[in-house]
Image (cartoon, rainbow, N blue to C red):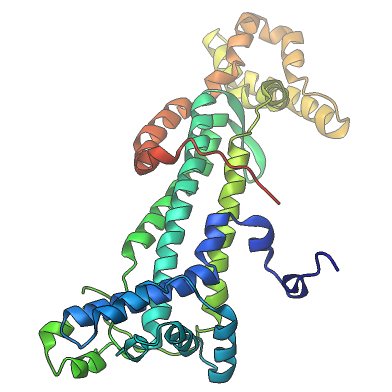
Length: 383
């Protein structure tokens, strides 16, 4: 039946089949994994030959010519027999490299290819994620800059509090993303290659191969301690790739969102009008006092009018009419001409616009410098 291939008879992670980018899906693919194993075996043979082991140019050339042609069916059959994935691929590689067969994986342990390949995939995974995260930060930074001084309701404990600006709110999101990119950069830079140190990291097998010559065995500044268990052997096959695949689609989605953010100023104004009169009461009181009024008298007037307006909003579902009540009360006649200025939303946002400018220049733009060449890439989400 058409379309009834074997791949559709098994569970497939939607992270690969539906969501993640092609480059991240390939990064953790069997093809990439096992060709990297073969390259590591090639590099090992070249290093051992250079240091004096009897490895021939013909053996090295044979390995070089078979890095890509992996017989996955044979490898699967070998693994069923041997119950060991590394040895299965050693035998599969040896089958197409009969001359080099005796020196493939010479002196090494399974973790030489397993752990080092994981580290290479993690490094390359970070190199895929970092530019994507930088693009999300760039788009959001542009948004924050554009709306740095547009007032909007600010909330505390999910309740309307003081005004902030749309740009300042975007900086709250940016702050987390800037910490994320620094953490990813640090994790990427802190990766240390496992190197070639044998089963427990002592390099005993290589010391034996090179007849006790410590100068030849001493491979680079790599991980020192390598005693290990198998408790992560299974879960790392899931947790490592799927964490990167998940982060990959999240960042693609975030870029898509941040490139399409829309602000509706009139809607924001309507929300502000509902709350701003309550926020402006202290300003009104101060204006009355400056005009010769008594603070305590004014405070009581405002308190009563505020409660009446709140009842209209909460009990009747009406609009906040506090301003109309103030305008209708003769007590406030001396300051009626000041009300528009006292209720200008821009006077309630404090230093939010300046904070946005400073945050973008000092914290955001510098972390984007290494990724300038990747900023123009667009994301098209595909299912």
